[in-house]
Amino acid sequence: MLEISGMRKSFGKREALKDVTFSLAAGEIYGLLGPNGAGKTTTLKILAGLLSADGGVIMIDGQPYHRERHDLKRRIAYVPDQPFLYYKLSGEEHLHFFADLYKIPYAERKEKIDFFFKYFEFEEYRRELVENYSAGTRQKLLIAQALVVKPRLLLLDEPLVSIDPLVGRKFKKYLGEVARNGTAVLFATHILSLAQEVCRRIGVIVDGRILVQGGLEELMAMAGKETLEEFYFQTVLRHEEPAEA
Image 1 (cartoon, rainbow, N blue to C red):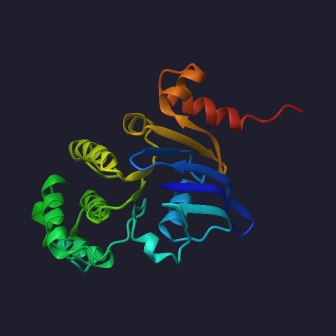
Image 2 (cartoon, helix red, strand yellow):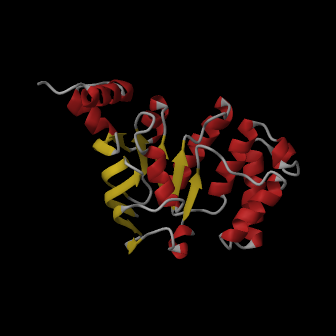
């Protein structure tokens, strides 16, 4: 579904991404883990079409991808770490507006919109202006916005920020169904227990490079670790240790 080779991005003199390479199959949930400033959000923004890469090759469904490929962008949905929402629309209007951009037929979208308001437990806010939403309710709207268009590639950047545990549990369950139906999911998070729970493969990115990637259980077994947290800290701290003179 997604193949990235040698992706690079700089902001002035700062290299945010350096030769990022990984792939993602249809129906797979890939966890992108790393400390602040490692390049997770930059990677997702490039794939969402919000930024352009400075180099490298990105392929989606076997086709070259860049931010002007609007046909391919309609196969992608993005839940950002810092939400942008139209505050003067109601939640229901917002979801219909987003579905219009993806040309989702009305009957199909209405069924999904009704489902998500109930499933994520914010039915009473569907006609309320978004500007009056709490942080958690806005996050629910963002998640529903991404899922309602049935993307082929779902990009998640810390999707459970401000979400209460019960709704978070329902989201994780639904995410499994989304993957089983063939959607590829790229999941960037700081919550290691969450990544261990939902991701089949992981990549650890530090300083703009993916240091290690592979099957979750395989990587932990190779490192002799029982939890993803132990494996992650071993990987990151080893990279940060100064080289011997």
